[in-house]
Length: 146
View 1 (cartoon, rainbow, N blue to C red):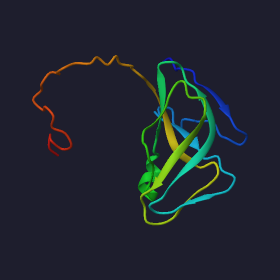
View 2: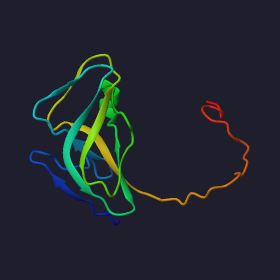
View 3: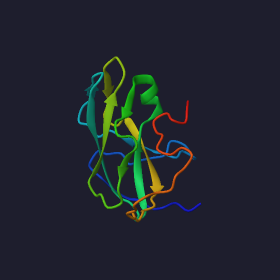
């Protein structure tokens, strides 16, 4: 299998993304913190990673929640999946939100999210006076049932 190369630069103390198993789709990314951060129930915070990416053209990196943090603590990525565009060169930071009922401490170096590399298709948007009809039509938000 051919793997796209992603160049990374790390701030001092930052850990590189890594795959926890041989066939993991997401590479774990870690918190770059000077000291532990407590996230209160119902609040959100931005966590630094110290990671800077140079993605190949035609790709994006998606930042997604970690299932263990979500299930055990109610911590998830607020804008999941967060998109890192191929031309972005700033630090990867993760917006965590706390849906649980007890404060949660995020420790320096803790795995806080996972990053998945995806190919991206760009579109050409063509103005039109009308678009084709379908059986579903304009039905949205639950219109196809549960």
